[in-house]
Length: 227
Image (cartoon, rainbow, N blue to C red):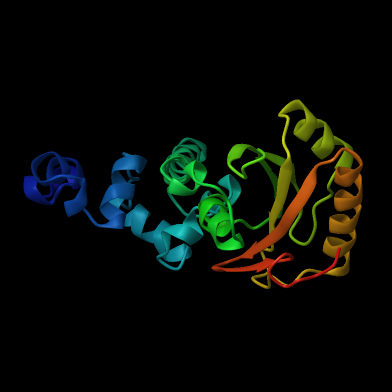
């Protein structure tokens, strides 16, 4: 059945206008983003197919690539790009409203809560650097690299240069493990040691290196690792 053939109160757009966005389920909201269906399925049905491919989890869908979304019948370039943009806005909204940005950083959990919305569901590794002032308040963050499924290369010189430009007194390195296992590998440990030594040369402290994997995280500082 075409959405236009549904009762007005059952159509996602009309339902949102009358009852508000909170009254719609995930598929209905996604149908509004998709806008149109195909000759065989309406936008709601395509939305349900897309959600099902993500295990009916928005956090999983947020990590889908453009190509992955286009594997669903009825989703082409325009629809996949629109969904990706909507998901990214959601991530940025969560980050923007995080209270962690406005307090002194004292533990790894604060950084996990700050960065989890940006890294969850990704199928590739990303490395971020968080810059702190003398009082451990965040003065900036930056994604440095975006790599494959198992590793990403960190350029220590770029990190130090960015920290000096921002007049940072401390830095925290954060990256994700798509595998779901937060335990650092030998490469993670080596990169951490290299960055710490380079930062110390310029009187900058590497406060922590945090690895995020799904809803778990590993903190070098919490584990008391001497790097």
